[in-house]
Image (cartoon, rainbow, N blue to C red; front, side, top):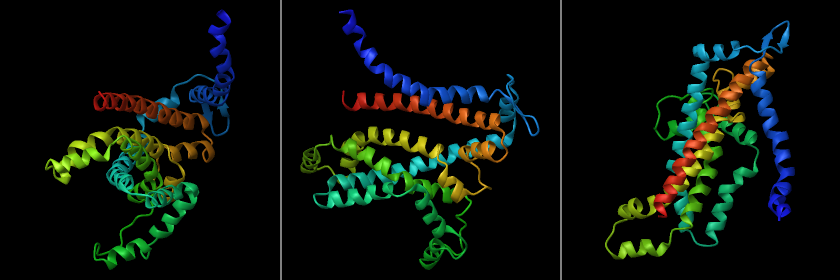
Length: 286
């Protein structure tokens, strides 16, 4: 009997050891590295100091970078929710074979490297004669060229395009629980389209929007390729800042501090958001 009791733990032990080796050990090493000292000529010294943490906490430059990262991630999350939720609803209402075709169109960009997609946006944004500016000026929406490259706007647009499928799929999964006959019943009882959307559809898709928002926010806040290409060296976010500290200035302890702050902040936000999602699911399906 005792052998059966410990059998699940024995079976899960290889997976736990693998998880510890490839996830927990590097995290612990990064945390320890953040407390080491570094000098241009002496390199990394294995001493326990708080100098790197004090520098990040006291320097306004780091505050600006972290606030910019948070601002970009929030904008991307909001835009994917605003445009992704209606797109998921339209996809849900489609019939075969159009649903399969448009689902393939939606998932198609995920099969292309994020670097290739971001370079495509760089070609659309680059310079005053870029295609996007020409189209907007041709439509009379703007009077002069709008700078997109090396700005937060360009980074937000690029990340929104890259991360939109995650929001759409999350909302679409929530809509699978929605019976179309409920909407038809509301129509037969005199409810208008806006009333149906507000009182029937929206409560069903809010959990999916929250779940998709967690994924999008985490990926946007930790994204590297898109901010590095569209933001360049003049527009730093947390991930590109950590990259520069590790590989350009070679100040590994300071880069470790930035990496640990990103990890802790994202973990805290995800835990709190998960509690909100669970509570929302409990209220919807009570």
